[in-house]
Length: 353
Image (tube, rainbow, N blue to C red; front, side):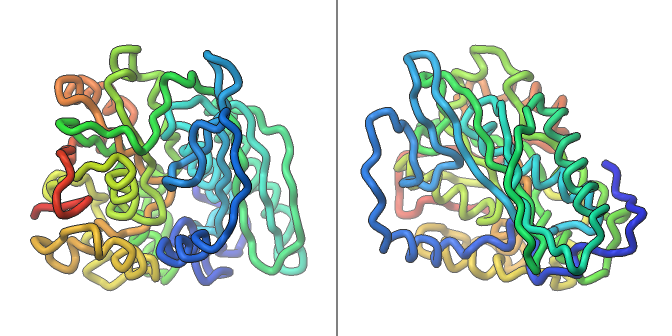
């Protein structure tokens, strides 16, 4: 992925928090939402925000439903074009995580006109446009404001068959858990922001973040029917998003830490103390429902690491999982079977050493 820019500015130095690590902490968000009286939804709404799923599903007919999502954040990388590409891949991921196909996207763009050249905006939008072209998505407009802090993302609409929705509430006991991308973008990008590494040093996580989570074109109908539930792993980390999926499905997820795919620099960045505020808030959010007692502190940081444009976590029939994994590896070389689903026990998520 192209990281060079003719511009001297380093985008990560213009913000306090970058990428999905800038999310409102999950426990704070829940506390806020619990106090809001939302309007009633009609019967065509198949999936809303009640279970913290990745996108909303609105049924249009027996064969067609809309998938709708929105995602934006502050810069996680220094190169404007790469920032646009990663932000776009991240936003499109929510539609892929539901089993849908994204069709249109509109930009959400806050740009500091007083402190940044217009060329930066051009490069961000070009990076986004190129990524949408790769995804066969129509870039149909958006909204921009003059703001002190740069932010960019997309509102995305896609299509799905109402009978083939991968909500996060349908994991089945006996399923295997597949993770499509390696973990560690949070700590690796923290090292970039603190200027311990350059983008050249971090090509592996940068390429991963810019990779679309498109999987349907790799699978046949039998494969897609064997995927019972899914989510994408982003700012709440593997532990936070798997907790939401396990609780929604009323199951227990058990991970083997030794099976988790990591970037080459993930552990060394954690050892050097490159952490974000989200490492602590994700640990707090999952403390009640997750069992991590077998892990050392660095391992706990890995599962709490806030991912930006992270992988899909798929709950897959055990008999189909090896074949599906083989097909996924054509695009996601670090994809791995990382755990299993069982009937509910004392914890929603357990991670074994």
